[in-house]
Image 1 (cartoon, rainbow, N blue to C red):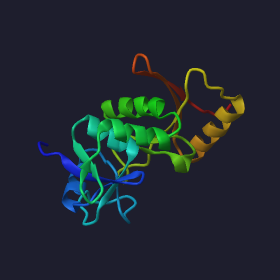
Image 2 (image 1 turned 90 degrees about the vertical axis):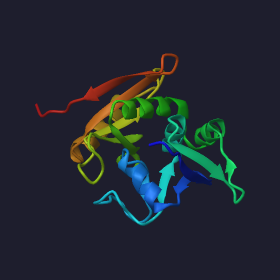
Image 3 (image 1 turned 135 degrees about the horizontal axis):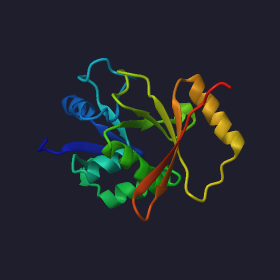
Image 4 (image 1 turned 180 degrees about the vertical axis):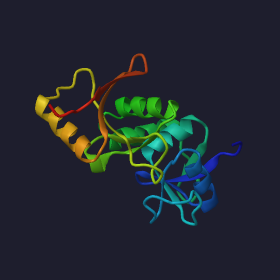
Length: 185
């Protein structure tokens, strides 16, 4: 793709108003959500596409989108977008390192709020499969109790997912993954 897609920053969301460009972006890796369509059956749609700030930072960094705001179409810099994301997401930098690592390894990453985790992760994409993984981001200094691990594991098993704890090392921009396998004794 040569031409950057224009995206408008409105509050804490990014909007691709042109449905054709939104469909193109969605086809590139299931980025965003078309308004009013939870899991599109086909990648072309005739409504605007909403991106979250995590996706916006990633796509801006990659040079895929150009972000503007206000009726004057003032350009939003990557620094400003990142700053806005830090206000919205607790431990944004840690979560972003994990998001980027998963994306760079060819996985599809969506918000995992409905599963009580940071990310739902797909191999093929929403609407094509159910997310096989739920990922929680923890720092190396995070406290996590056995009870929390068991709760997350039980939830993951109930919704047929693998529970993963991602531990980013910001200084190295690397991520260590702890994958839990549950079985009956």
